[in-house]
Image (cartoon, rainbow, N blue to C red):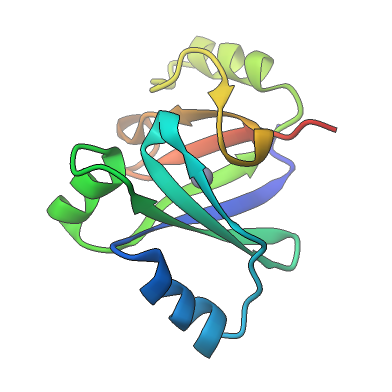
Length: 134
Ligand code: ZN
């Protein structure tokens, strides 16, 4: 069902500061900063092998990332798995009693379709599923 770890999302206060660490000190590359208004975030993706680190900065004090940092501080926010047919996977997981945050796929960064599962169902781990257009 899951093809690989697509990316690990990291909640950060300021992208520029984090990029100086992840890009500057750790030597990772990133392509561009993308804004995803639906999720009230600015995103920088840094490829590592076949996965990526996704740095997330909130663009609004009431955004999910801002609220997360307020409660728990900066750090790993979610793990994203790549799937082929997101709609079918969501239906399958729902049947198996997994609680979904997104009942239907919605658009995420980089033109992908994404959906989040509820961390209550998955040992406190916020899981994102993404389907990339070919
Ligand atoms: Zn993500």
